[in-house]
Amino acid sequence: MPEAQGRTLNPIRRRLVLYCPGYDAIADRRYYRLMVTQFALLAGQFGIEREIGPVEVDERVPSVRWSVSAANAGWRTETTYEVLRWDDLIRRDLSRNWRKRAPLFLAMLTASWRDRFMLRLFRMDWHFASLLIYPLVALLAVLCAAIAAGYGVACLVALFLPLSSWITGLITVALAAALARAAEPWLRKAYVYHVLDDWIFHWQDTLGRRPDLPCAGRLDLPLAGHAGTSPRL
Image (tube, rainbow, N blue to C red; front, side):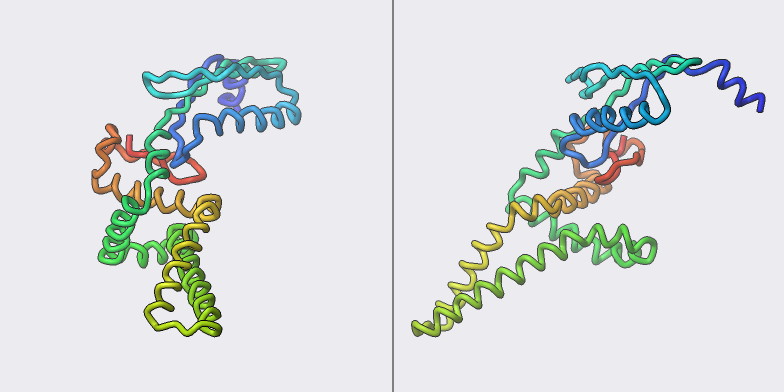
């Protein structure tokens, strides 16, 4: 009880909140919008006076920051929120093509199979393990559907035109490649590439294979985030 009274009599007047987001390519914009919308709900529910300042960009850190003033009848707190940015590395990962992504993906799968990582992860938390294999399942589903559709079209063509087996195979492969290519926007919208590149990033970071991440290897600092943990700071 005395401790609670002390907090009421001596409220925090100023504070600085540092946040390192997870594997999020738009963290520089997402969290300010989240602050504005959610703080409006909080203020309406509890009658808190609020004032949110504009976003300031600091390329030296790099980071984005903004100030928030919150007050009630008996207290007033000034808070500076600073979101540490590394979204440039994430956008670089998400923009690479399959010539660069495929070798990393295969190497990661080989290492996971050799170390029985996924088996151990399923035993610990099958929900999280299911999230990790989601990109693999989605890619296999799209590939199988594209091959089946390509083969189906080739068989339909063969009903009217005599085709050799190699021409049938060629039509199947060409149509499957075209359909798989057409599915790329859907795969990106469904966060298949995002989760896949997130998995690749953490595998590389664990092995110290991210020279573009100067803070790698210092201290594991997991922070809350909707798309993975923060890099090692």
